[in-house]
Image 1: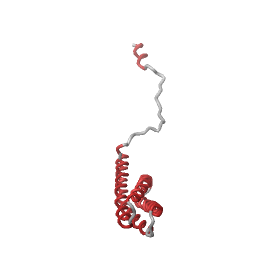
Image 2 (image 1 turned 45 degrees about the horizontal axis):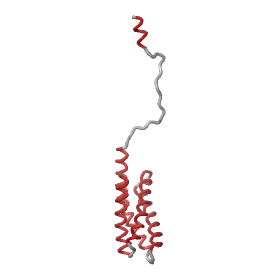
Image 3 (image 1 turned 30 degrees about the vertical axis):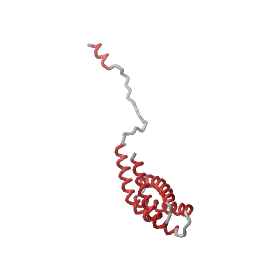
Length: 145
């Protein structure tokens, strides 16, 4: 459930940022902004979860910048007819990278909290039992008395 909330939050904020920049600033239609936001959010969240486990917030933000730039550039170029694609993409990617820096802190906290809640003792599968020669150790003592 945590992943669904984080992905939804990322999508809504990405949609808002891209609508302001691309939609209002560069006259890209809402449908195109919606599709771009959907792809950027989905791919970016997969990258966030993967990179944040193995690296730092700065590396994850840099990765998101590159991913956002590439996706926004190619999708905007393919979906619209405009000359300012590079400028629109650069402004959008920088804005999303600033948001991503703070979003990664939230993702890291949520993943750490989820890890603590799901903490279980896991067996390695190397179990051993005890064995003895005496099955009933007290029978012999009882017979002697």
